[in-house]
Image 1: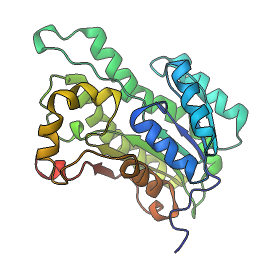
Image 2: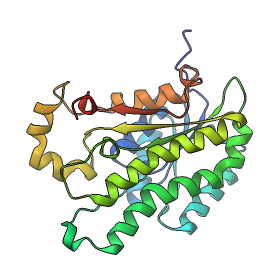
Image 3: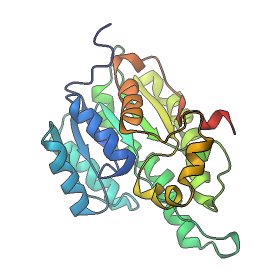
Image 4: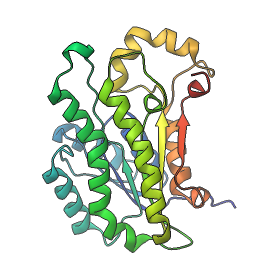
Length: 256
């Protein structure tokens, strides 16, 4: 029982791991002894975060743009070249675009849906051979998809493809869980509420006091909140949980 949440020695890939929620999750795994690889579209930011986290343990950057099939192939081949198996895949890379409904551009829609939903499926598909090599009945391989509470309710901002894509991530999680459980690969999603991140910066700047006031816990999320949930799902403690969408939002989703 004392080792229920142990992830030491696990090999973990965190997409979008250079900042925000992805960086918080990556740091949690590094500090708990996992071998962590991170991706991000911006090479300098990805390498800077990996360098910072390397002072705490093992973290290596593989900068790619997951909006392209070449990016999916590059990170997958990079992991294959470095590791014989992958224990945990965390699909966190995301994009957001806001515009009034009468002006919403098609390229904005395509970018958000491609990064948030399409890449989750095709990166998972491409990495299945490495996940299968890790998977055992006692210690299944893990896929953890990062959704959003905006996929559980209608958000106040006009971010139409974002909320639609995150709702898609939640249902894709269930579909993948149903398909892969027999192969000892479990798939779950985390639906974060507000956390301090670049994506949330403008919203928190404009509405931060209101968001905190309306939150049952009267605060926004901390790195420990999101990393702890991911570590639970990746450890022995989460080995019997699959197809779940777990809100990590201080109770916001209970008030919607």
